[in-house]
Image (tube, rainbow, N blue to C red; front, top):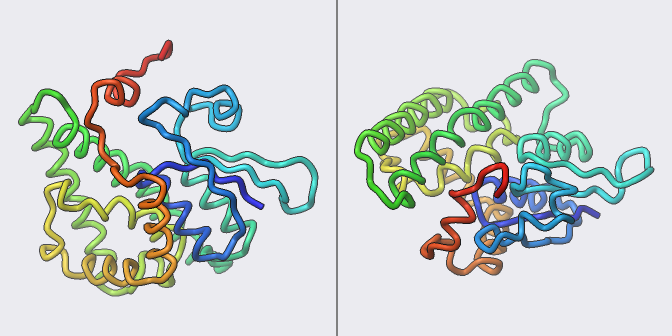
Length: 230
């Protein structure tokens, strides 16, 4: 059984996608990041960076004490290795999968995140910042579109790399992007959206958080005003 510490963000959706696709039994443990649940000592013991998602595997391979994992990319890799699913044993395909997994972790995730912040959440609209991150998001969409020109998924078969990237494309309109500008990406996006596991994953999100918005000052302070002293 996997204890899954979750909230309805793109990084949270990545793990729900994997668990639903792989049929891994899990117990959902919502962590309301707008209310500060991520600072609870019990959660910090699992995720010292006070970010979701995190998991605790109570039945790790080889037995022994439970294993906790934080950071979404590390969780996807852990679950893929635990289950033997969505990460090819073929060396070249595995390398490609990890390349695109880390492309998401170091590229489209942070850049789209800053795009969201300055265009959607910042109390002061700074044109330079908005323009900077909308353009960089656009560049990264172009990179992904090019990768998908000759293959259905980023590493050939559906993998943890696709699961990592897809949730960051879901809010493309809020990122100032038009999928019609990226035809190969659009086909990929619609293919993943139609998967039954994707539909289940996002249905869970709607049940957990019916209003995934940040529209009050206290939530903004919790999410965007953190320092080492919180």
